[in-house]
Length: 66
Length: 142
Image (cartoon, rainbow over the protein chains, first blue to last red):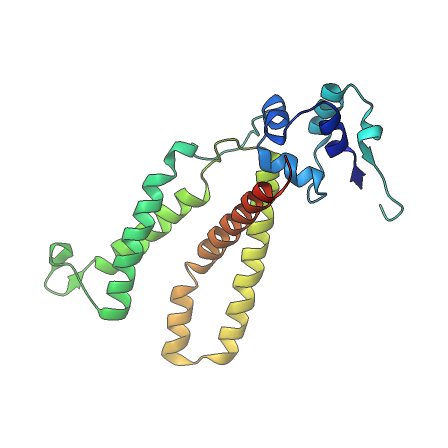
C-alpha cells in the first residue's frame, strides 16, 4: 500500500511534528507511515483524512500486490 | 490518540533502569565471582544474595519492559508485539541449540540464564528498533 501523506503534508505546510501533535501520535509514527513501514489503523486513517479534508482512498492507495 | 493499554506510567522508566543496572552488577558478581553480601546471610548455611539478585533483576526488567512511552500510540503497540514475537522465537532457537550443544552442569547453567533471555532479548529488540526509528526521523526531511 502506498500513501500520499508526504505530499499532502507538504501541500498544507505541516511538519511531521505538527501533524503528529494534531493527531496525538508520536513523530516516529508519522515517519513510519510516510515511509511505508507502518499501515495505520482505520481510526488513524480517518483522522488523517479529516485533517487533510480528503477521502481515505486518496491518501492510501492499494497496489496490485495488496 | 493515547492507545489504551495496561502499562506502567512513562515516569517509571528511570527507577527500573537504575535497578536493572544495580541488580545486573549484583547478579554477575554473585554468579561469576561467587560474591555474597554478609547482610544477606539468613543463617549459618544460607545466603540469599543470588535469590535477591535474580528476583530484583526479573522484577526491574518487567517494569522496564511494561513501561508506557511518553506518547504511546498504536505504532508502539505494534513495535512491542513484533519485539515480543522475535524475542520468543530467538529465545527458543537458542534453547534448542543449547539442548543439543551442552550437557550436565553447563546445561543447568544454560537453563538458569534462559530465565532471563526472553526479557533481555525483548528489551534489546524493542529499544533497538526505537533507536533506529529516532535516527530515521532525524535523517529525513521534515
